[in-house]
Image 1 (tube, rainbow, N blue to C red):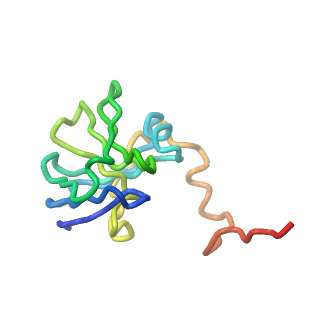
Image 2 (spheres, helix red, strand yellow; image 1 turned 180 degrees about the vertical axis):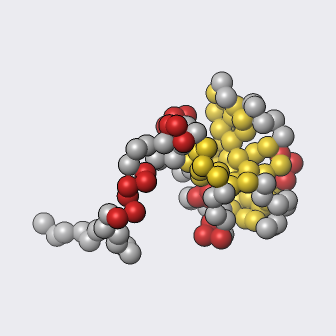
Length: 137
C-alpha cells in the first residue's frame, strides 16, 4: 500500500508515506511499552526517505535517547514516528497515527519474552462498542 497518510491527534502534523510498508510490528519491549504508555506499541516500518511531512513541520519536535530519536507533536504530544540507531535506513511510524489503520494489520510480534502475561487472556473479557456511560451525580 503506497501513498498512505496520517496525522497526530490534534491534526497539526500530517504526513504522507510514498513507499510500500516493509513491515507492521507489535513491539512488547519494555522501552516501547514505557514510551507509548500502552501494553505494547504497534508501528509501520518504512524506508527512511519515504516520509514527507505535508503540514505542520513547525509542530514536529524530537527527543534523542540512547536507542535513537523519537519524533512527536509538540502541541498534543502524539508520538508520530521514531528512528532506531540499529536500523538507520528505516523509520517506524506509530500505527495510531495512520488514516487507514484498520487495513494495516500487524505482521509480527517482537520481544515476546517481555510481553505482559495477561495479553493472551483478554479475549474473553466483556467488550463494549462504546465507552462507559457517564453517571449523573
